[in-house]
Image (cartoon, rainbow, N blue to C red; front, top):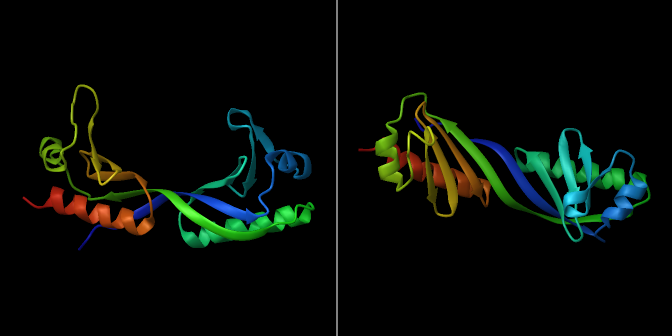
Length: 169
């Protein structure tokens, strides 16, 4: 039986027509706050932060596309309620973080070798590798985390590839 791959976080960009200016968000929407580092604005929809930059809106913290679409629908509703007339156009998933737990010990020396990764027990207690532009962290207790995958399907495919390498001699 293949281990369950859990999506931990999805980061997506949203396109609205027209794209609201962060200054407009700060002026019109109660509860919004400035993000000085990026000269933008942030608004929380539930626990999900929505970040407005010059030409981008970024959503982070959702775990699936249904949740993302729900946040977009709520965002558009909030904007309309406060007089910011926009229509949703599109969204793009740009980063997926996923994890799995093997529920068994992993030999990190072997895992580093098979994944062509780095393992230095004096520096870090895990294997760090890069597979097909996705960062992989493997811990001795059998937890595997994928960072910077471009899609959910891609993350699942990379995880299958990693499990094939680690679990087979």
